[in-house]
Length: 283
Ligand SMILES: C[S@@+](CC[C@H](N)C(=O)[O-])C[C@H]1O[C@@H](n2cnc3c(N)ncnc32)[C@H](O)[C@@H]1O
Image (cartoon, rainbow, N blue to C red; front, side, top):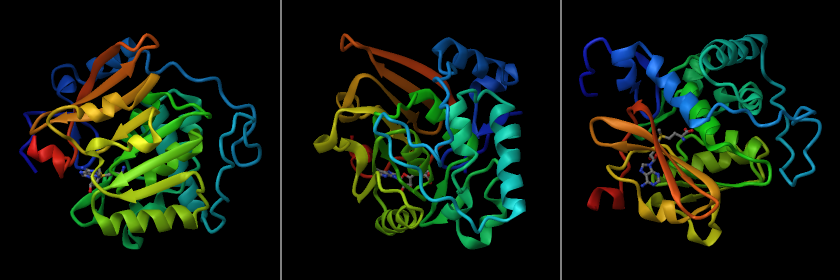
């Protein structure tokens, strides 16, 4: 990995460790300011019933069957992650917190790493790739403001964890992974966990998935050096795209399509993700 700047504050992790340039100068305050300015923390109205027991009337799918094999340590570790690493920072959307407190992240990492699944770190998932840090998954999910009737596109399926989180919050999730064995493993894991509203395909996500567009939510977990225009074109009115952009130094960028068709772009924080491969490298 590239050598980090002096005294970086490591706050997030996407593909690799994630650094916040803003935080280098401000000890993290600037990141918080960015988030407030974007309105990204504005919580959706909380559900009145837990997802497991009462699927909403809006057409969102019933949540998967709970993982009954979980032991107390797993439950406690996940609760600590939510309280300390998410709510304890700037994750305020109650629906994101509730879902992150329920989706079994340990089922998306290799068995030998399951004990570390709820630490706030990225973890290797094979093929030189990683599952993103819980905080960055929560942050990106909060930024896109998922809605129960919405349609989501997830670029860089990896382990399938981000897709599972989105599947709990949106009606349909379409996820693309460029590494074939990862796409196949994620597809199987999501199926085993009971997710019926996620479609995973192996391929290059640079051009999105026009057959299922427009999307209310697009989350990209690999960094190109520019925002792929096809992804912007596939944003529905009111939809939000969150993507890391850059080479050595990357910024997490949020693009919102306004109701009138215009675009609003906002830089959220400095981050470090794995590079987007495929067509993105040719441009
Ligand atoms: C940080 S990892 C993904 C984390 C994932 N969201 C998760 O929850 O585990 C980034 C993923 O993007 C994939 N990727 C890179 N370039 C891609 C592309 N052009 N299209 C689709 N996937 C890509 C990588 O193979 C890798 O699995």
